[in-house]
Length: 198
Image 1 (cartoon, rainbow, N blue to C red):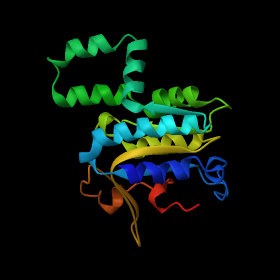
Image 2 (cartoon, rainbow, N blue to C red):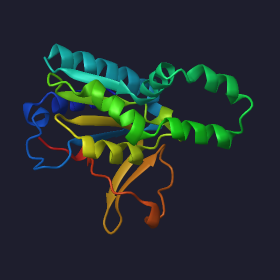
Image 3 (cartoon, rainbow, N blue to C red):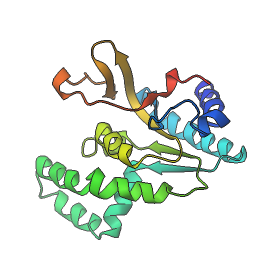
């Protein structure tokens, strides 16, 4: 984790990265992958990274997607009702309910954009991707974020793999799972931070 922390700090604190130099109109969304088994260590590492970036003068926002969703439910007065109904709902019905309430285009992305839409913020870090699965999927978040993007870079911490393969394109494999069949593979306009060079 120490090497990952140093690598990320070097990139995310660099003026060229923060000013989105070289993106030529592309959306400034980046994905940092990690082994799902390292979830706890990555959380601690992200906390250290945030502290170091702020000490370095980088104004940033950190958003846990699960916490964002929970606060959304609380503000709408739905969280307690869902908890009460959970015992009586089938898993499928509960998933459908959470899918509807987590709709990114209508609910979460506008809330996220409102939270980070501040000219003083130079960087946003997104965590909690694994915690919102399966009712909120990464490709849906990315597709919904793209039209709203963006005045500054966004880095999503992703517990899995992000690969680019000839003839197939980009693939996100949450928890290292098997990739989707070709007809169901979405197009990701996000950069793999592992391949980013200053």
